[in-house]
Length: 259
Image (cartoon, rainbow, N blue to C red; front, side, top):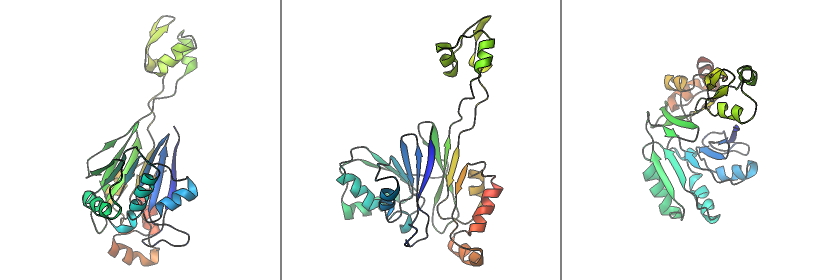
């Protein structure tokens, strides 16, 4: 299944002419998941993938540069006559934030479900899960680990033929986990399927200083999207503000053995 990442915003707290504030879109099959929704996110969507209907939004923390795009996006969806439910996840305080937004733009006609997530809670998807983890910032903040469930091993057609299984529906049945008849009796999937393959993992930290929780969450990930707000010359400032340098982010990735 296709899995890709679109960076809609990689800048700091203030949008610039070339970089928008934080927002990352993950697309898996037909599902679209947005992580953070900084100011101008819907404009960045229009420039890249179009103003698509996202299925869910995960806010890392409640600093304005990570959620100021929500009011406009929610309102635009209403003007497009959206009917599908939108689920927004975030740390404690998300419900109060949305109440404030609703007082300004009104409550949309479609359903918006709000879910406040804490460490240890997992959101189950179709073939994947998303798990929040603690990061090191000045306020309560979640990083998010997106990981697919293990995938079945590869089917070995030569092994199946050697056991007397005829190509055709029986091959499909074996790949679907069913036992079929062979030349000398039943043939089980384990005889012709390789070991399960690990699913892919993407980890998004939002704002954070380098921390052990991120190293653990990101271990073996295919992609780590980590705060890198400051250059090495500003390392002290990064520490004071709960951010990371680009070098610090690279070290976390190396220590976590990110691909």
